[in-house]
Image (cartoon, rainbow, N blue to C red; front, top):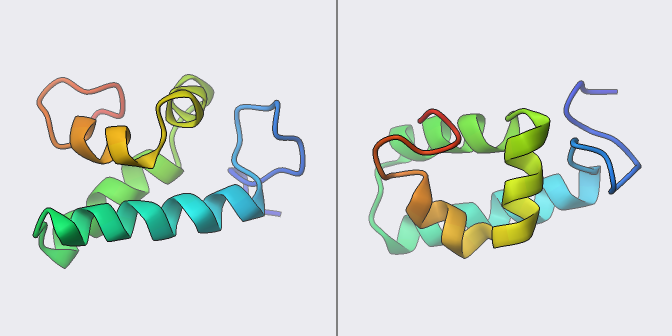
Length: 79
């Protein structure tokens, strides 16, 4: 099992279902923002493989808010 995948939603790791949903939603948002594919891959890596604090932040805020937050300087994801 991947280090960032889990079956326990209360953990700081994404479940397989969450991973699929967040990746789809983030890609959709990034495409709508006309972010180049290379940058999208970079942002997705930073978001989906983040530490526990960041994963909990993602769950709380959701993909739309995070897609806008991650492109700003000094964001929680270090992107």
